[in-house]
Amino acid sequence: MSRAIYLYNTSSRLKELFKPIHEGHVGIYVCGPTVYGDAHLGHARPGITYDVLVRLMRNLGYKVRFVRNITDVGHLENDADEGEDKIAKKARLEQLEPMEVVQYYTIRYEEAMKKLGVNPPSIEPRASGHIIEQIALVKQILENGYAYESNGSVYFDVAKYNKDYKYGVLSGRELDEMISNTRELDGQSDKHSPYDFALWKKAAPEHIMHWPSPWSEGFPGWHLECSAMSAKYLGEEFDIHGGGMDLLFPHHECELAQNTAARGKGGVHYWMHNNMITIDGKKMGKSYGNFITLEELFTGKHPLLQKAYSPMTIRFFILQAHYRSTLDFSNEALQAAEKGLKKLFQAVRDVNGIQAVQGAKDNGEAKIYEDIYDALCDDLNTPVALSHIFEAVNIVNRAKDKSIQVSPAGLVILKKIFKDVLSGILGLEDEQSEGVGADTIGGLMDIILAERQKARAAKDWATCDALRDALGKLGIRIKDTKEGSEWSLE
Ligand code: ZN
Image (tube, rainbow, N blue to C red; front, side, top):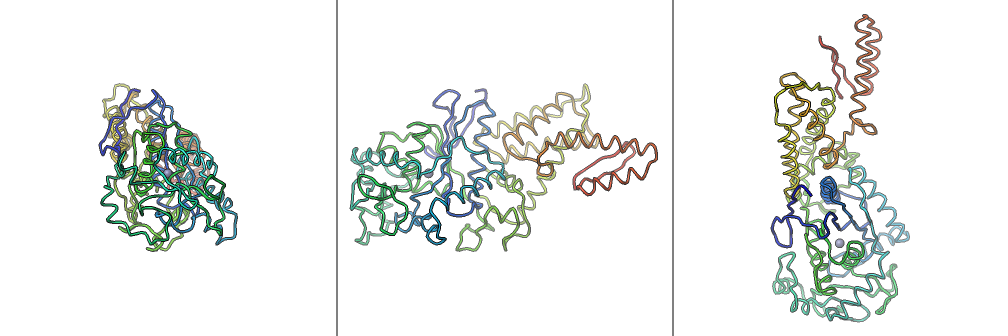
């Protein structure tokens, strides 16, 4: 690979040079959604972050196998292994089969991701389709002595594990502190300790999702699916495991402990975590009344929204912040992003109208191109990469108003920045010319304006006006100047 990529590894708390396990091949696993409700803002950030990571790596020549799972069983209402399964509850309330709930919300999630320009993963495994692998993993952990059976359920023995390895290394927690912060068991629990977690749960009679196992008719613990499916599709040792910061503890901590207890090694070389989104400075949550689904954002139908925001506005907005920083959503910030994006795509369209000039001096195009890649390879620094892309926009604007000239080589680079980086890696597409590329629109406009120019020369004002009006109805504005006509999208 020609370029070095540096990634912040949650495990070491350092930015590290990325070295793949297998030369030229990268395995990435990201925890996907629990499909019991519509995709919301919280799904957009990891969706887009790891999409950019995969696109960047592919652009640099790596072959990437990207696995993003669908959680459709075992995610209980609280993290302490209590409460109802989120999907089973939804199914009970709506009188549906659990798999109907799963199918419905999986499709909705995938549609929302597609609108956001997030490419589908290479493999999208479901937890319920990997019960056999999960049971095998529980058996292995039991056999190695890091789990115990209790009334038909199986729990991970955190204290035992902590003696041989260390529990809490990923999230930087100490078991002693966790113990003092955990409430005492109420005596009803099958667990030996409150911080032990379920590998297998015996299903209560009213529980509608259950499978046979050596221990009981039951279902797997939530953390188990990712340990089982990542190993199945990427191997017991793989390159990158990603997810939201909210999954760091307990989910990823438990995954790491399970991997180590079963196989003697954590198996993940780089752990990546995207930070959270806040809304007007507050945490997003149903109880705060600021829970916004992606559908509501795209349509503007939410009391907190002043208007609808397009998927690309959301994507651009998210990429304007580094993935490890928190990001605050507000109408003002989204409208500013909308303006910035409009400016960006005007330049993407205008670059096709620029005539290169032989011998024109260097405007720094090649340096901008290098700077963009340097930023992206520096732990996906998308805000810095975007600021360099705006330097390219600036060159296009100045070339358009003829205050500078662009050399043929410079023009090739500017087009490459918009095509390979802006669209190819950052996944930002011009929504106003959806379906056809900006090149096509530019080419069509050249043809139409040439015809109109002929009509102007022949003083055929009726044709000129008719063309202008027809284009106006499509949101294309024509401005006549001495040199000819210019066009822009409204
Ligand atoms: Zn997971």
